[in-house]
Image 1 (cartoon, rainbow, N blue to C red):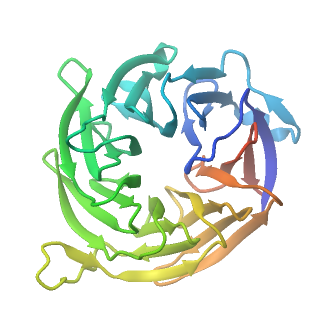
Image 2 (image 1 turned 90 degrees about the vertical axis):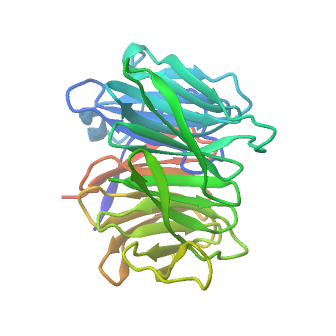
Length: 339
C-alpha cells in the first residue's frame, strides 16, 4: 500500500498536545462534505473541505462559511467527536468542566452542557466519548466513572446514568454495536456491553504497569486494540475470556502485541470496511497495520521529521483516505491511497 500526501487544510490556530486531536465528519448530501474538528487549548476549530480540494497539492484555507471557531469558555478541552443523537447532528466536546454538545445544523449552537464537578466523587474533568446507534452517548470521567446521556421524548439531550467502571482516570473510549471499550491511566482496559440502557462489565485486561493506556479502537473483526504510552499496541479478542481466581470480573488474555512506535501512541483509527488500523505517535511516524485473525503486519509507514503527531482518522470506510494533525501546527493534512 502506498499513500500520497494530498491537500493541507489551514486553520486559524494550532493543534494542542492532546491525544486523539482530530475528529472527521463525513456528510453524504451536504457541502462541505468533510468537516474536521481540532482542539486548540480551550478552542475547537471546525474546518470544512470538499472532494475537489484533494486534487491540489498546496495548502489551502477553508471557506469562510465552512470554518468555525468555538470558544468553550473552559480551562481546556480534552476531546471532540461528531455524532448523531436522535435526529440531532452533534459535535460533542469534553473538557475540564464536563461535557458540551453543539448542534451542527444550527450554526453550532450550544444545546446542552453537563458539569462533572462532584467533590464527593472527585471528578475533575471528562475525557473519552463514545456513542451507541444514535441513542446513547457515553462520556468518561477522571474518577473512572462513565456517564450516559441520551435524547428524551422531546429530542432533548438528558443525563441518564452513571457507573463506576475504572479505578483510575479514563483516557479514551470507543464503541462498536452494543460494546464499549474504555481504558485508563493505570494501564487497564475494560469491555462493557449495553443491555437495556445499562452498561454491564464483560471483562477487563490485566494492568500493564508503567505506562497508561492512551487510545482504544475496535476493529472490523471485533478485536480490541489498545495503544499505550510506551508505543505498544496490544490486541484482545472479546470472545476469549478467562477467570481471575476469586475476582468477579473475567480477564481478557492478550492476543497480539506489537512494538508499534518508539514513543507514546497519541491516536488510532480503525477502518469500518477494511481490516486496517492507523496509528500515529510522538515519534514522528504514521503507520497503517493490516489485521489478520492471528497476526498484525505493517502495510504502510511514513515519517515526518521533528513532528509530534496528535491526531489521525480514516475518513473513508475502506481506509483509502486519512487525515493527521501535529502539535503546534495549523494544518490538517490528508493522505490518499495511490491507484
